[in-house]
Image (cartoon, rainbow, N blue to C red):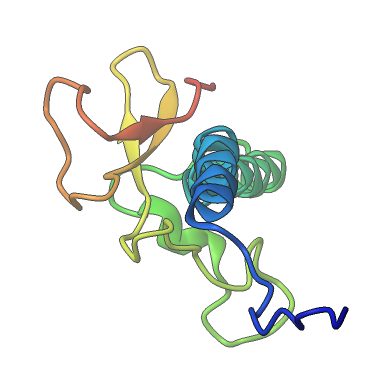
Length: 137
């Protein structure tokens, strides 16, 4: 007897494909939140690092001058105007959304750095998406 040759093409069944897609979907539910949250973590880390750099420059200014900059001088006094190496910062950093950091002079004599956040507007109540450094004297 002659055996009949099977001419079918081997492949995956619909059930096998659906099971594979379901497994991939379940894995993505665990991986996606971790991966998608990274840009927010990077922005928060940049703000913290910028606060530390500006605070260090302010403390160096205080060591050299015996005082912190006043409201009229602001943070611009930390940069050398003639591009020499005499400034405390090479340039004032911007927050991750491109806005300038501001300094808030407290009535107690302390200072606090702040970032306006993604909406680029400061909330007068200190709420919303604004970021603040610790108050230092």
